[in-house]
Length: 348
Image (cartoon, rainbow, N blue to C red; front, side, top):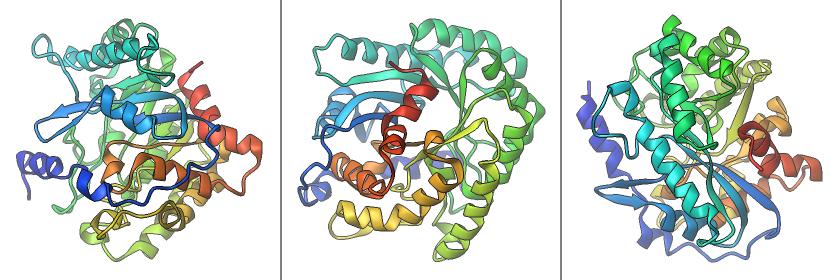
């Protein structure tokens, strides 16, 4: 079994290859005036990869009408000292500082980090409340919720989440008590795990119906380790579980994250980056299944940058989303690209 240190080292090996991305064909921007809220991106300064405001704005400014973004937890800028449970508040302070820079207008029209999602250990249960309240204060009106990632798989070939979760995390009573604290404070919960764990998400959603849950990355379909070469089987199991999860009215889903190296697609391992049509053709069955199950008003397209930058550039990714949404109504398109995100994250 791989150690936590080994897994972290493996994870940090996978960063965007700018030379490879430069080979991607330049495409005209589809529907350049369509307002977009990007509800899922990260900012960090790792030893082998930097993605901060300048890099984000270079991507969001590549042609699409990105009006605002939502920052999602990635263990950036935790406080170096103080009580362990309070150290993640540094991430909210950091993201709020970036948001304040963006809100000045100095950096252009996109309002980066208009919503902020950070981390609190949900196993604190009721004791999570003062930590959440500290995040709210640090967010200066922008803090919206938390993500305590729960991605776990028994295979040593699958990298578990950065929180090093145990098996069955979502079923722990203390964890559920923590998630309930979010609903009581009007905050949201981001569910990030892998597709074999979707039944755990269903049980959690039913246990805490008062908390709005946001399923990340189409539910996390895997395509590595024991799931490699089994895309049809994975899709069938995933689709059935997603249809059941959609029966939980407190759950919405982010459409994206399929460009990660853990998923069923190999675009990042091809000689040249994919076109938007390549991405749309590959992802469309998964995206359509989500929209069919949840409805457009409970779905939102996401970039998951810079993680999905392993597979494609930002402009091409949003072109692909627009191709995938070509057959929906105007009302549904608004929901998918901005409306759902604005409502769920309470953005202007």
